[in-house]
Length: 485
Image 1 (cartoon, rainbow, N blue to C red):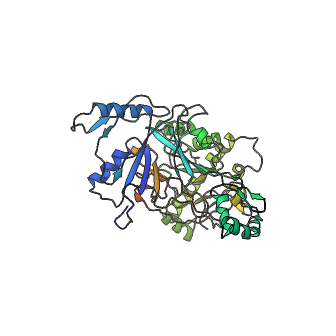
Image 2: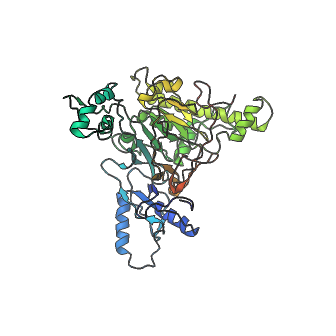
Image 3: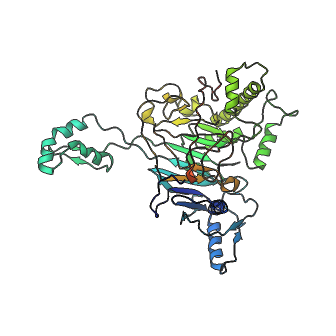
């Protein structure tokens, strides 16, 4: 969207941003007050509750004067949501680079915004989750993939080459493969045989990303909200703000009990490792990534990592001591979340179920978590050797496919912190994997960029944000939070 960016046609947005009520006003305000001009167009689509869309209609019919600059947000009860302090939503004119967006209304029957958009076949759904204000969790779902063509496909096409040319004018018989794969139509051959499209029998990947929440179920029955949308997710990204630390790790003179920590976190709209693990179990997640840690528990900064790696763990260097404690605290987050997650999973799952050999992973700045499809895990080692496996900041190899929306960037906001926290709509990278670049709290209006302990879910996002990726060291086998060697 910068001055050096190529300009799209006037009727096509370069960036599409999705988020809850207020996101349009937020971006218009920022761009207008900062005198920001953009190269190209953008559009904002808002996810609304029925009560909110009804209020907007009433406001539109009542506003007859240009002196009306805003309206007080409705305080009517919203399904699976908590009202924050009442806001006045400013009524600002369109920015010169803004196109008309959609108002996407919650389906009350399912309490969700199901399949509200898609990017290169990856569908995106959302549902409300409980926080201190209306907040949203997202699900990115890849469609089923086709098995490889039978080994004799090209041989059979080549054997019919002469008759395909003379009878149908097909100069290259192998060009008919596109009809099998892309159009998924049967190909009848001149010799009387035919080729069927390969079956769509490779399960697509599914990733669930929650915003700030004390209860990602939304307090809804199990057949409504985020739980059915996120069922059998390959990866769950869930916050874990507070934790009850053992005495050896606590820096408080009077360490808080588990009950005290849970009550405090919940009162502020946040979760503990136990809450994250319990929700992971309720959706049968195969992997659990934790983020949004309190500032009391910072993930090790890259500078501390370097100092710790080059120094003596038992030395007196303040950086080494801070990094050592930070690692131990993150390990405790992982341990507590893993126990809750495994306890909530179906205990009659087979011994080979992926979750049985995995632990929850606390995100750190620069984390790369690759999710492999079932057809990509054969012959891999470690975590990637199981169905639905993954590698963490490891070297990746094998057959790669690229899923990318090119200039058609999509972003979604998590709803907390005034609608901030952009996220790129489900990027599946050139290695056929979804990349979660994590960190602590933060984000910003669909920018999707992240810094040290600041980048709720980093990646490419709205507003033309750049990707920030700093590769870290890989941990020892079975260690969810890697230690420098």
